[in-house]
Length: 334
Ligand code: KG4
Ligand code: ZN
Image (tube, rainbow, N blue to C red):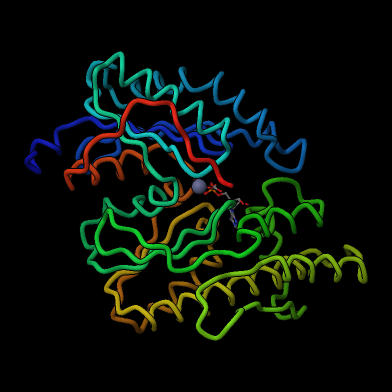
């Protein structure tokens, strides 16, 4: 298909891998709508995502969300040309809701369906920017993952580093819970940290072996727990600032190591934790004197959303990758 005709196509992206239901509508390089229904209110009562409640909430919301997304984009259901959906990795029940919905839609509209990887979609949140040059490294920092990828082009991803235990966002959420800040912990820790002294408490920076691009956050999480056991909850802003600084140190050390190991032209960020202003600033500093171009998605494309799924779908079509079969199959997080 020519580039021009693909730019006229309406692609919808469906996301339901965890606790956000998202539907985005894309036409060419323009996001016509990107509606997200968060389940924060449901899961905050339990201090974390409850998988059964997540899938039920997706079921009750997804249909209405599609109508809202189409309405906002001034499209009708018959205008849809392609459908993209997250099919891996994530919570099994949650993924099944999005994939079943997408398969039903593809059957009834007789349109091609693309099942996509959630982490690749987080990276594709950058792809509306036409200045990206390859090869590139991409770094997804979210509630479920802390993963570094080498990208030969827009659709060829090789994993070069990952967390061996907790994900970075998971560490934010667990520390948030220890400090009684509520769920999700990330934004709350960021806010408390603004009032604190980041050099007040020394937490351990786990770098594993000298050459490793893998991560470990469980030692840091435990160090915060022991600090609270010994000192109580007297200075929450200092704990948050010192924890956040340590996370920043870990991410920056690994980013520097990755770009020294792989000569790349671009570095792409993605995932919910990348909404954090302090971490965005720390990472930007690394690239100030580098020839490598840094790309950071706007905050509404960092969280789980449907538009990033639609964008990745567009690049898969452009590459000539055949559509997926219409079986209702998912690959959940192990
Ligand atoms: O990408 P995402 O929406 O969902 C997953 O794919 O996991 O990321 C959610 C994660 C949560 O762990 C949340 O605490 C974290 O992103 N997060 C943040 C911030 N906002 C969200 N972490 C640090 N600072 C933030 N401002
Ligand atoms: Zn995500």
